[in-house]
Image 1 (cartoon, one colour):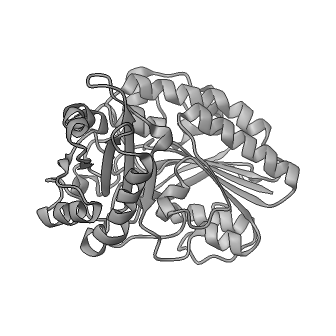
Image 2 (image 1 turned 90 degrees about the vertical axis):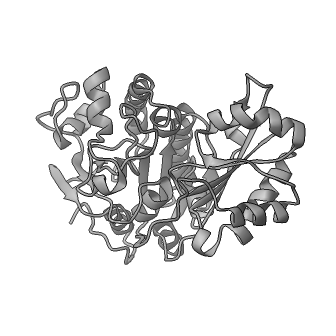
Image 3 (image 1 turned 60 degrees about the vertical axis):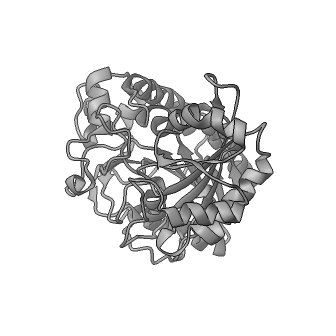
Amino acid sequence: MIFVTIILDGVGIGEQPDAAAYGDEGSDTLGHVLGQQKPSLPNLQRMGLGNIRSFAAVPPTEMPSAMYGRMQERSAGKDSTTGHWELAGVQLEEPFPTYPNGFPDEVITSFCEAANVNAALGNRPESGTVIIDEFGPEHMATGFPIVYTSADSVFQIAAHLDVVPIETLYEWCQLARESICVGPHGVGRVIARPFEGQPGAFRRRSDKRKDFSRLPEALTLQEALQHEGVHTVSVGKVADLFGGVGFDDTHKTGRNAVGIQKTIDAMRDADASGQNTFIWTNLIDFDQEYGHRNNPEGFARSLEEFDAALPDILAVLPRDSRLVVTADHGNDPTTESTDHSREFVPLLYYGSSSTGSLGTRHTFADHAASAAAFFGVYFTGGGISFEN
C-alpha cells in the first residue's frame, strides 16, 4: 500500500480568519490567479478543486473523483517549516523568530567570529536574486559572505562557487545552525545559497542549495511510520524541513517537472517492492519561482503543468492506495507583498471509497492522522483522519 502526499508549495485558497494579524488580509492565491489568468485545469476540476470553492476557471463538477475540502493552519506562522511540521502532526504554539530589520549586531558578530571572516554583507530581508545582484561584486572582491533573511524564519548565506568552496559554505551554515541560530535566535532554517556567473549575470545554483533545519521537538508522522516498518520517501525539500528526521530515502529536485517524475518513479519502485510506503513530495515552483516574484502568469502555467501530469500520477497509483494534494501556506503573486500569506490550503483526497466534502479541517494535522490510520499506525498527532 502506498500513501502519496503532494504539496503544491504556496498554493493557498483564501485568507484564514487570522490573516490580518499576519498582514495578509485579502490574500487569495488560487482565487486571484484563477480569476486573472483563467488557466485550464481539467484534471484538478475532475478531482473536485472547484467543489472546494467555485472559480470561474474551475467550476464544480457533479461527481468529483476525490474527496475535497480545505485545511486551516493552527500553528503560529506561515512558512514552509511550520506548515510541513503541522502536516506531520507537530504544532507550534510560538512562531519561529523573524527579522524584518535584519539580524542584530550580536548575531552577525558571532557568525563572523565563528566563520573566521571579517564582515558579512547584506543583512536585511530581501529576494535572493536581488541581494546577490547587489552585493555579488563586493563579495567576489572581498570573499565576505552575503547574509540575508526574508519574511520567513531563515538565516541565509550566499557565496559564489568560484570564491568560496561549497564545502566551506556548508561548514559556515553548520556553524550558524549549531552555535549562532539557537535559543531566542533559533530560526526554522539556515540555508546555503551558492551562486555562479559574473556581475550582471549571476545565477543561483538551486541544485547545490542545502537547508539546515531546526529539528522537530516532538514525534513526527514519518518517524511513527518508520517505527512500524513503513518505508518513508521524501521528494524535493520535505526532508530538509525536518533536518532529515524520519526519512529512509530522499530525492532532491529542481523544478516541478523533476519533482513530478521522481514522485512517479518512487511510486513505481514502491509498487514493485510490495512494501508499505509513504511518499511526501514538495513542488516548489509555485512559491519559489512565481509567488515570491509576483508572477501570476508563471504561477498559472505551473498549475497547468501539474494538472497535465495528474493522469500520469494517478495511472501509477496502485489500487487501495491514497493520494493527497494540498499545500503548506499561501503566496499570492497578485498582491504587493512578495511574502507567504496566511491562507487556508486546498485538500484533495483520492483513492478512498468515501465520497463528498471533507469540509474545513481545523488543523493540518488531520493529514498526519489520515496517513497513520491508512497504515494502521497509532499516532497521537492531534488530528482526525479524513475517513472518520
